[in-house]
Length: 413
Length: 167
Image (tube, rainbow over all chains, first blue to last red; front, side, top):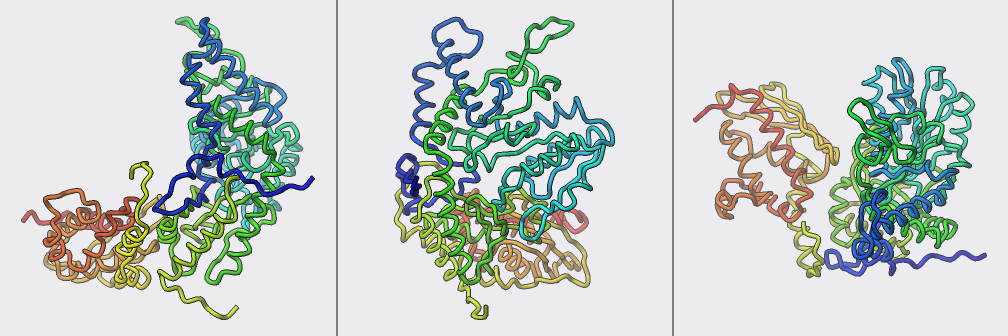
């Protein structure tokens, strides 16, 4: 089967407008993705035709809303190949999922002097909740180190794990550098030591097919707004054996079976972890986004994004005064880079004038930046709507920026 | 910034960015003046912008209420470094109260907040070369870069209350 480059830009209404009088080359999908018609329309359609509160109503609209909400959860189950529907919990975001597990799993299973292992390459959302947990429980946080190439240094993994290690939490893909971590191999090593594994899949879900049974991870999370769905909803997958034993995260309506003044009986999964009115419209629109992705197919998405990544990487590698940060052989479409004598922040402002949207700064990965001796980089990140024209526009904008700052390229190689 | 779809003249947009990144700012941003530590430090403070990683450490030598010398060490974007560089030049010979006044004027210039304080002719006279930062107004996301050094100055002076007179 020949896989061709995708042609999805026209599915996304935001690209109709000019930005700063220019065509928009949106290269910041790792921050948030743009949304296709079907997702935007679904949000609107929900509120126009079937909006009601879910689960307990006996009227028509409530039944419609509930059925659609359940269908959304079923699509999520299919998307990640979870064994059981009730292992898929709707949360607000990846950040909330991590906080939920840090609090709830932490309450149940982490004692004083226990150890939690994360990595130096994590996004702050996969560092801070664990720091907070360790402080609360007087436990210890340990870090898998990284190398200058922007990959994890797994040699020390075996010695990092001790009999006190109660959890390993690691991202699937680095948001700052695009590195795909070898999580299947890491999970196997952790499982061999009876260490449960939490995977932050925020940067993976739009680019890599997720099969939680094949990975055999204990938890997996991703955000809707990074997979072409709306902001405000995300998914936490957890193996039934853990979720059953974990206490609720938030208390309130919908997560209870029975409430009396003296005690309360909690609901079964997944509702035990879904207090209050869920983001119903958003979950239903997320289903549209996941259907859209599954319809295109990850093979096509990966081919398309890899082709563009190759073009961009080759161009940046051969452009004088440009340095790419992170050289993993396994990457999604993310490139962090620096230009000599132009701070990333200034670069971002200048290329913005040419309609090019990139991200600049520490990318919420200060420990990673500190290790590499950097304060900020510029980051280009691809989505399935990007085209070769976006890359060309980006490269022209870089040339404009270099001219503006009068960068004299050094001739020696 | 609003989310309305705007079709603006590409030429005027380029003018805005050229106003932001004037020669003076690029010059001071890439080759900052007074980029060193002082021998005699009467006041100092550190400033940090966690959103982007811009860092400033400011040093002041103060004698009889006058700032004799000002210098800084720092890392960051051209706007933040140029602002620190031009600030240290502007501070030389100013009294502490004049320095604090300058801070208010500069803030008003880049945020365009206070119409009464900020008439163009007054600004240009009092701010001198610092008026070059007027272009920052069009780039709200860069205001914090421009004001970092100044907030750091404010902290340095306020942390030494004996330096601030009530005149």
